[in-house]
Image 1 (cartoon, rainbow, N blue to C red):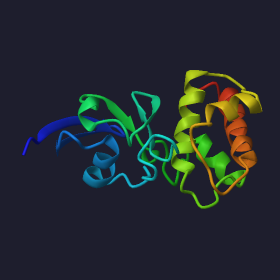
Image 2 (tube, one colour; image 1 turned 60 degrees about the vertical axis):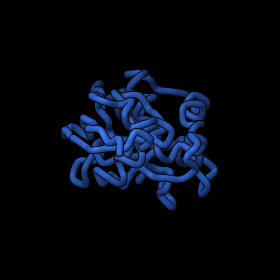
Image 3 (tube, one colour; image 1 turned 45 degrees about the vertical axis):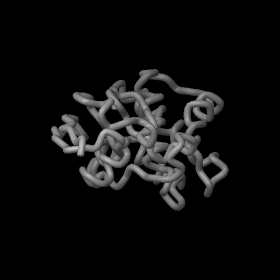
Image 4 (cartoon, rainbow, N blue to C red; image 1 turned 90 degrees about the vertical axis):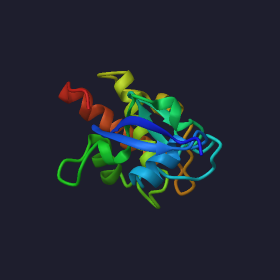
Length: 164
């Protein structure tokens, strides 16, 4: 057994986890820390449902070895809002009807958050939004409502002048 201790911060909380060298970040988040909002699907970084933020950047957690994130800060969907204080993206997804089955939504929201955080005050075009979320696949929608939701949130964030 070659287990080692992994020190990471998930949603602002420090964790020490005993891991195997071959475990992915996805496995650690779901199985060891209990962050079930991070979904498992293709395990090949093709669908985007496992997307989390690694030091603020959207990454596919299914192909990243957990040992590679030692000392990093991870944000999952559970870390960007709560039922009483939703993130503007979460609010917009609900208002625009962009949530259907919900399986891709955590990855979609975190991908959009990373994009908007990288472009503060930006009011992206529909094509820019489409390109930004292209790595996260949705089987239920034609993406129109998702793009509407990201545009709505971008407008609200730009108007508030605050980084979300």
